[in-house]
Length: 150
Image 1 (cartoon, rainbow, N blue to C red):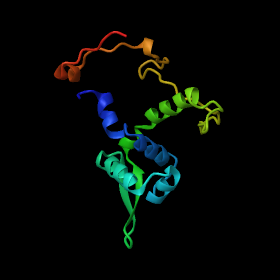
Image 2: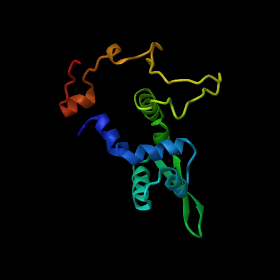
Image 3: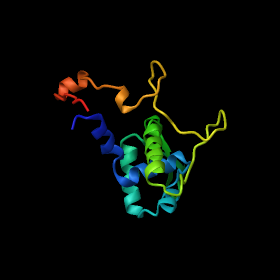
Image 4: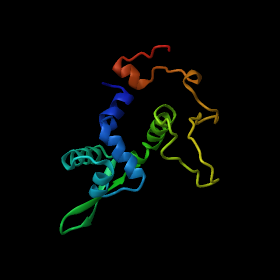
């Protein structure tokens, strides 16, 4: 499907993939660390790590030759998933965490516990779904996709 959302889901839409990315943001880099934190079977973890490496979200960095062992580090493409992961966390905090958020984020610069908000890259105004409109671009024309009004 020629849709950017569908293409993103093709890479990270599987349950374990975003949890691996989440843990990578939290500093986990080793296979055993992911396995221990997630409780995922080793064969599924191996498959997911391979998929994320093939997609360019993670990169393998060898840290031992005998036995061969790798760290898994986020690439620039992987780090660009930060806003996606943050939006998912904030949604989960609001709708699926009755006892409050299990994890909070503190802005290093000012020290405040903070939520991320989407703003216009041009004017800095906050953006919500009613503040934007979709229109066909070159990619839409090629795919024959016409956006509908919500």
